[in-house]
Amino acid sequence: MRPARTALCLRLTLALGLALVGPMAVGWASARAPIYVSSWAVRVSQGYQEVDRLARKFGFVNFGQIFPDGQYFHLRHRGVVQQSLTPHWGHRLRLKKDPKVQWFQQQTVQRRVKRSLVVPTDPWFSKQWYMNNEMQSDLNILQVWSQGLSGQGVVVSVLDDGIEKDHPDLWANYDPLASYDFNDYDPDPQPRYTPSDENRHGTRCAGEVAAMANNRFCGAGVAYNTRIGGVRMLDGTITDVIEAQSLSLQPQHIHIYSASWGPEDDGRTVDGPGILTREAFRRGVTKGRGGLGTLFIWASGNGGLHYDNCNCDGYTNSIHTLSVGSTTQQGHVPWYSEACASTLTTTYSSGVATDPQIVTTDLHHQCTDKHTGTSASAPLAAGMIALALEANPLLTWRDMQHLVVRASRPAQLQAEDWRTNGAGRRGQGGRSQPHSP
Image 1 (cartoon, helix red, strand yellow):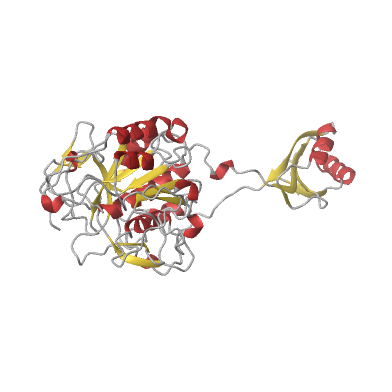
Image 2: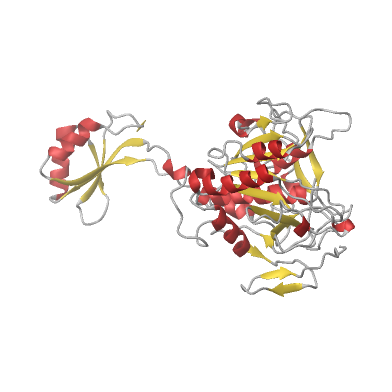
């Protein structure tokens, strides 16, 4: 249960995942099977007379020329179903054999979206200040949604104390293949309920990523069409084996693992992953996602009050993880934030008790607007990265680290110790003394 101090604020740009690493690859959304309609485009050299002959001969209706030069024409056939997953081979052969037809194509449905600003109707979306345009430097989520990106085809798993898989805002996106209970070794990641609701953490993190949109309940996740799974592994004895198994679950199915935990943030502990967990990281980035590399998103730590330093946390400072810290709505460094060189970016969370916090799903089919810490920041980043992967699924794990750094901006972040490193990137100095908002 984690938050942190760090470098730049990650703000999605409209070109996220596209211009910064290369041209947009063909993604899941554009790889769907074509849907054929009852229209054909036909090119003939002799104009109306010839196309009318074709229409009479094969039973088409001539809807006229497509371009003014009179060579391309639009034909429809009323005897063909309006939509089909297969082309009409009979008409294809007839048009192909006709010597006067220079070119033809049965038309398919083109998936296009209106690039208007999409605002969810969920009742708590107005409370999601970090993504609803309430503030000038929000996460730019609405603009990216208006480009048709919502996390479709991307799978995220939250490694935590379980997720409430039947939650009204999660059930439709829940993915059992991305879920497991390594505390009890069964497939059900449902959290263990206690009077204090101590196992609410994973459900809260999952909702930030993939809470359903426009279902008249709670708010919306950053990537509201992402498939979401949960690994229950923090509610019991934790070993190197359990961590390694959790980080290795379905590496060809899960694209992003989100983790908001680590060693104690007490300012005295220097700890990190064991032999097996380090091997899980290595295998994830070399073999996961078909060799493109698993994406491990990690909360950078909440030990600022104890002068903890996330350089002493072997999970956040691993080269294989993408470490995320926090900033408040006002752009201040939170009191719990830790300073270290390994933090690649920040997203929003809260600071003092009066600061607005993060809206998300909660146990017992409820909502909350009281989620905070770097625990809240890392899942926001995981959702944003899911949007980038939908735009360009060929991004490698190293591409994504570069993309996050390049897309991050100082924005309104306030700190006295900004420095420019050798690569020309802005970051904060190495002081571990936290700033109070």
